[in-house]
Image (cartoon, rainbow, N blue to C red; front, side):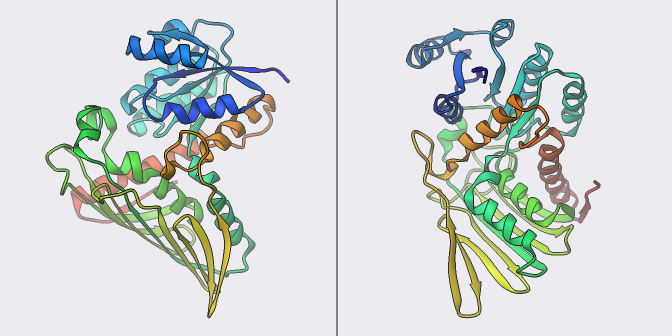
Amino acid sequence: MKTLQAAVIGCGSIHTCHVAAIEQDPDSRLHAIAETDIAKGQALAQRYGCDFYADYHEMLRDPLIDVVHICLPHHLHREAILAALAAGKHVFTEKPLALDTGEVRVIRQAAEKAQGKLGVCYQNRLNPSSLKIKAQLESGQLGQMLSIKAVLTWSRGGTYYTESPWRGRFETEGGSLLINQAIHTLDLMQWFGGGVRALKGVVDSTFLGDVTENEDSAMASLQLANGARGLFYATNCHSTDSPLLLEIHCENGLLQLHHNALWLLQGESRTLLVSDEKPAGIAKSYWGDSHRQAVLNFYHCIHHPQENNYTSVEEAEISLNIVGAIYRSSQLRTWITLTD
């Protein structure tokens, strides 16, 4: 099997998860990184033992590079994705795929014509608890899903936004809490429920109103495609990063994800189904350990082109549409219908 030569564009905090995944894969090698902060990039390249580029366009001309990881601020995703695809590379990008559906349309058209694959990092789908929930629901043993509740309470202080001014602005982040932290939770809710037909949501800025022009808290009611109700709440105003609280009420039981452990409650019975593994290496605890598996899945599909076990452009667009619909609903104070 050919060793994949990988490159990373952008060396912010999330890039460490990608580098760790590459380094842990015996069939890939970190070939290069690109970073506009030259001193930082040179130091990291020396640490990783790879090439350094201040301009990723120059890096993309390297014929040895097979796959490119994009870990840039949101507003730079589209340009980098298009450039990497045009250079004939496989592309694995952090979420969100783009800022809005207009950008997604351009990316989709480019991906359809490109030689390389394009995957989006929705690693939370690969958490052991997520996979177990999906399997439990698809088995039919719990009967019809009646409702799903998700509560995400994380902490983001003022320095989180002031040290990276692109955050918390529609022009550069595409929003704030919803499109950055909570999009993974919304993706899981729609994934478990077969999609979202309609929603009504509210976003607001509270304790972080002086450092972000967008929301730090949000709530939404979802009409899921499988007929269940979805109840969603998220905030960045907690004093700590609490694990996601998720409950799925079905006819024959309740699935409860609490403190990274998935339980099945049926009457007086309470059974532990699975615990999410604690992350290895340098990943933050609330990121989980599924970046590695997401990268490995994508690389496997590069080696086996007939397989598509990764989040595609079409799948990534679903959660982006939900985020946009919540913003519109909050402005209009009405239900928003989502189309397939």
